[in-house]
Every structure is written in structure tokens, then in C-alpha cells.
Length: 333
Image (cartoon, rainbow, N blue to C red):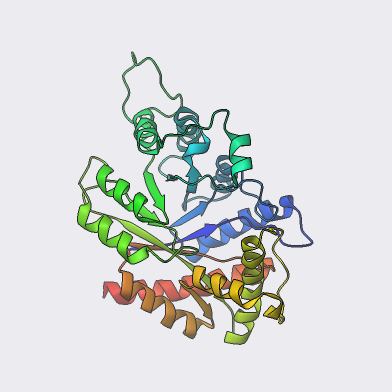
């Protein structure tokens, strides 16, 4: 592991507003920079009552403006929702305002339900244009002739680093074919992680963007002073995910000792989806993250976690940073 990073979904806790969530995101980014995280990524979700990062590029700008060194980016932008030129202009503008600090992760999923996807797109094309759209977008961000009929301004010549995101084998194959870095959404869909990594690493073709495969995997983290406190704090995310799975999305619930309200079959699904995670004290989290790193050998680990109390969330990522820093130093020794 060369670096460790942080993915924030800008959760809206029960009793709080979207404005509170966005202010907390900016505060968390400042803290992440102090703690030594390499990147701070935000994700595009729409029509989600508990997530405030729908206008992802706008939030990235706020975070980048509030920090000084940490890389800030999208993990990711759901490209089928957008024209490639628009995203090139948005991230080209961000890269112009914040040079050498902006990342662009691209996903193929809608990041919403189909009704919302239809509201986002003027035309729902039946064919899969994602590979062509990715290459079109990269072209806008590259060195473009002044005589080109269409240019991203700002955008052309910024060479914003583009990542392919995925939770299946498709993204791994595309990232390998295009010679791009690959990030796997194992924090909520770990089932195909190992197979995807093998495909990406074995099929990778060097490109002008990247000479060697570079893979980042995501893991959930909920850390506290004791295992019991961490388990209590994590109950918010378990309950939130269970409600999402049963068609009742909402704001991030307060923690509870009563998880029996989740039907056993649903809890089994939630536990499986969120299984690539570490919950507990610093010692417990360290052992679990060390096992994840040893098994999957990522070049980078990005951690995420939704905790109802903002101060507890800051503390959780502080503990995780201390743990990951020590693990990285041990690997480098």
C-alpha cells in the first residue's frame, strides 16, 4: 500500500440538514488533510434523502478551496448521466483553479433509481456508450489542437487523472484495456473483488496515462476507543443500509442497540455487502485492515464510514489514519 485515502458520501444525519452535512464534509476534509490522507473523494448519488453530494463537482470545489494539499476528486461521477464535454469542462475548471490536486473517477452505474436516471438524462440510449464516452472525455482533457471543432475550455491540456470505478468485472476489463487506474467499490459490493483485481492486473496494457497497473480498493471503517463503542456507532450505517435495501431510504439514523428490528434475511444481505470493513478499537481495526491489505495487495486503500455524530466520525478517521500510517510504514520497511 503506497497511500491511504478517504471517501465521504456527505451523509445527512437524522435531525440535521443538507447544509449541516456539507459543512461537516468540509470540516472532515480539513481533518483528513491533517491526518495524512492522500485523497478525499466524493460520490455522485441522486434522489437520496441521506446523501448531500449530488452536485459532486460543486462540493469538490468547496472542499478543494478549504484545503491546501490533499487531492480532491470524484469517486465517482456516473458518466452515463452526463455529456462527456460537460464533465470535461467541470473538472477542467476545477483543475485550473486547483492545479495538480483534482481526480476524476468515472462510474457506469446511474447512481440512482431508473426514474431518477430518466429525469437526469434527456435521452435514455439503449446501447452502452460508456467506453466511448470515457475516451471522448479523456480526449477533451488532453492536448487538443486549437483548430479542433470542439474543445473543453477550461479543460484542454489539464490532463486530469481519470480513474475507472467498478463493482464488477466490467470496470476491471475496461481499466486494463485503456491503461487507467482502477478503483473497486468493495466497501458495499465485495463479491467480485478478487476476480476483478486478477483480471485488471493480468490484462493491463501500459498507456500514456499509466505504465503499471494501479489499483485502489475501498473498505468500511468504524473506529472508537473500544470495540463495543465502535459497534454501537456502526449500527447507524447498518440500519441505513437495511432501510435502503428494503426500499425505505432516508437520513442516517441515530445509533441503536436494537438491531433486531432488521429482519434476519435483510441483515444477512447487509452484513455480506459491508463485509470488507473494520470495526472496533485501534487494535481490532489494525488487525482487520492488515488482513485486508495482505489478502488483496492494493496500491492504495480508500476508507469510508457513516457515523451519526460528526465528532465521532472525525475520531474514527483519526484512529484509522494512525493505523494505516503504521501499516504503510511497516510494509515499506
